[in-house]
Image (cartoon, rainbow, N blue to C red; front, top):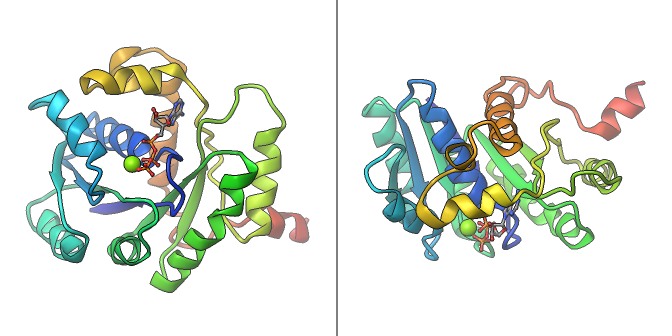
Length: 220
Ligand SMILES: Nc1ncnc2c1ncn2[C@@H]1O[C@H](COP(=O)(O)OP(=O)(O)OP(=O)(O)O)[C@@H](O)[C@H]1O
Ligand SMILES: [Mg+2]
């Protein structure tokens, strides 16, 4: 079983959007998926209520019990647990990170969001867990994405090669409890999520084989 914790101390970067999309995408692969909503705002729970009975299973949990909830999911035979966390919640995010195999940090390619990323990277180091930054809501054609990767790498962050772009499908679909791929099956948003899920499932992050851009440059 893999545990992906979606965390960022910064608000509005796409934690809940990526959490519901990754969890739902994984159900397409014959895996039982559990989405745990640790955020008192309850965005994932609200989405699940609009969605009805369709998978993934979604449960609102208290950060203090996340470790136990993850272990229960393992015992119940889930193949993937995705945890959506709240912004500005150091202690709760740390508890979630401790239960993670990989912490996924969404980040918009903007100066303010990049500046805020160190706090989340520090939290992952404190939890002694691998982390990967996912550039989210990136403009379709712009140099800011490459610049953002460089800036994050300078802070010691590993960046996923899969970039999630700013796409209306990610917003529209949430209104009635769908995902972008259910709203627009052959759309770019669906393709990005499927590629991102595959990338996050790779062992390179946990094994430390995914190096930062800065390290790759030093080696080259
Ligand atoms: N790739 C994207 N393209 C377009 N809109 C996006 C994308 N990712 C997120 N959004 C939009 O950005 C807003 C914030 O996203 P979301 O709620 O997922 O962020 P969050 O990090 O969970 O926020 P919070 O910190 O409040 O929990 C939402 O309106 C969402 O629809
Ligand atoms: Mg959220």
